[in-house]
Image 1 (cartoon, rainbow, N blue to C red):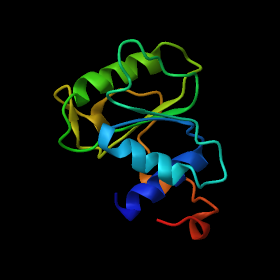
Image 2 (cartoon, rainbow, N blue to C red):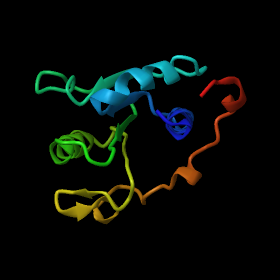
Image 3 (cartoon, one colour):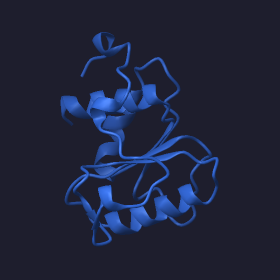
Image 4 (cartoon, rainbow, N blue to C red):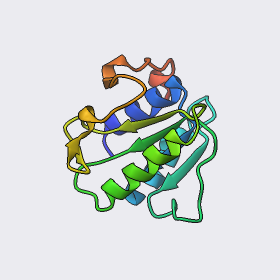
Length: 132
């Protein structure tokens, strides 16, 4: 994982994310990075673990989408369906805005809020204390 990955996770946690859905290859690194921050990191589910039998908790949730991973369209659609299932659910899709999903760029999808750039996320107060 890159230094940017750890910083992004910390900034999303400072923003209030408590549940993470991400590619299988990122799950262990995410758990390592999130375990050392002074917030409740919540739950981490890999794409594979988020099967038909697994349901997301009612927590603020981030779906992290990398480039070039299979099943992104299906995972994204399932995440959007989950988020739209209740007005109380808070979900964010984290990906490059030009990433195509379902034939459309993510920044062209309808959303309850405008896209947020990483620079718009809160700076975490513990960056200097947390190793990359």
